[in-house]
Image 1: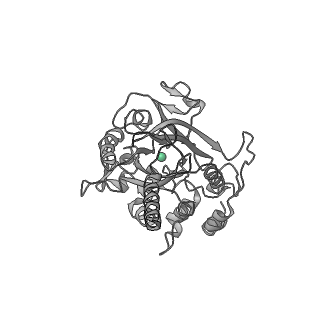
Image 2: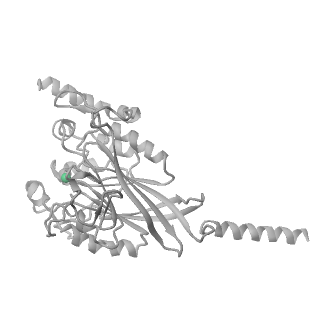
Length: 367
Ligand SMILES: [Zn+2]
């Protein structure tokens, strides 16, 4: 009898533990909140510092955005962090690293050191990443500990994507009842085809760029076939409803019309979405931050804002779908330029060597 009780107990435990994760809540729904965070167009602004005026500037710097990232993560059970590209070039620190000091062997570029520290889930390559040539970029990228993506730049030699074209992140998420599920998040990354003009000397004969929307349409079925529950586009491109053409610099509006793409992280134009600049855009909801029904965010530039998209996902039938969405940005200063967040001291310490070298170099030049 005792033995029988024990085996029944084991059977019960096995049964409950196997079914626990997939069991829906009382109303038949499993609901998961997923927060997606974006930085974009950092242009090597790691520190809250203006190298041109050699003084602190609290309106910029990833050391400030990092505090917003930490707070945003704290508020959510499940979050993902992405950078949308143009992170290596644009200020004297970036110039100093690429043109003066170079990459020391075994040393990680401070931008990627910062990204590793903040545990980015994936990052996109922006058009400015090509400004120092493919050789420098490849060396620098060796230090990045997360998927570095671009879908629409191809190798001339192989006719294959030059970078990793997409990734599928397998993430354990906790639902509203505290149960754990696995979610597959597909990520692609796009940039304007203009790189072939802007960086002709660095790129010609080595790579070519395919149109953003067509390339996205070509790749999303692959991600779906590999089991992606949702697809996020790291779109290093601006927002405009000008009629679409293959060489547009602003493809976000048309990327949102691709049914399989669920979320678009925009960039490149250093603007803020949702924000007043886009008030007249058709099929756009400024309250929820949606374009053509899809959540979109653009977090300005230089670390001045953090982009946030809050999703609620439901699983009633074994398939995940987004049932609520809202996008917005958070600034690091108020309208008067007063700092709203503390500096992430850990991050500051991690990149201060190159920062101080850059400042010393500028001062020596007497600039
Ligand atoms: Zn750009």
